[in-house]
Length: 394
Image (cartoon, rainbow, N blue to C red; front, side, top):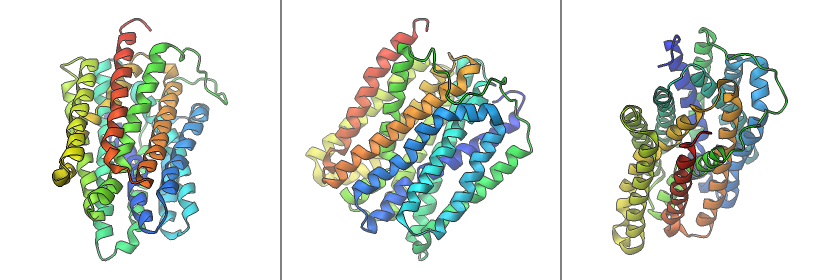
């Protein structure tokens, strides 16, 4: 728990819940807009309108947060998300989705840096930091489940044509979270001189480089599931939109369980061994999936139920490796370092969506699992060198 401010955990979790819902509604939007004959190439680039602003704004976010403070910056980002989500149901044109995701990406860049800064400035010990981060990140998994289940029920109902009004629910939660932050006190980090661009000196060392590469490919892999698994289910397994979204919801449920269990397990096992074990389990499951796809086509429908199990081992990777690295970073540099995490995460998300859209556009969905397996194999290799370097003094 966060020391001295136990009541801060709820708004922090709600913050990640909100950002999870707006960021992971991409799969729903892809599913719905593809039915409106918008091709996969356009939908693949839609992700970049979210991720590129995240990467760019992250460069300037540290200065903004230093000038206005963590609390005000976080409230501003949540307020903007609430207003934009309130407007979305009333706009019909495709270009507004691009603008909407750009604004959401900007708010997420600010919000994530603020949340990580609050956690790092209140936690000292590595395992406690990892436990807290897993707890907050678990709320992100809840958001994926809620947004897929909620929109799935709405889309499959007789009011399916009004599916966009589901965003008004997100708007209400955003305003509630803004209120919660407004009535509590947050321990702000020491004031530092605000600059236009953050000072990146000291972040060019090999452990940091390998860490950022691992982060890139973890998000690359996560996005392959979060944004595109519903479309994969619908196109390859020919299931309806409701079932496609609910199957993805179960991925989120297993992901939540994975992060919840991680917060307990990491108290007993070294973080690096737990991380490698999770990666190996993902590779094992993906090999089974690939064998079923290529050699047992008649029984491949069982994969609809196998895919969600990956969440048990995929979900812990991001918070575990973040906690491992963040524990080594000075508190006065945590906002700057978090901005780098956000940048490489957003790049991984954007590149993943653009490349996987090629598989969909060219009807190469049999290679979906091979595509993901390749990314996870790279994670295994990079993380091996990363942990080896980190064992030395940075």
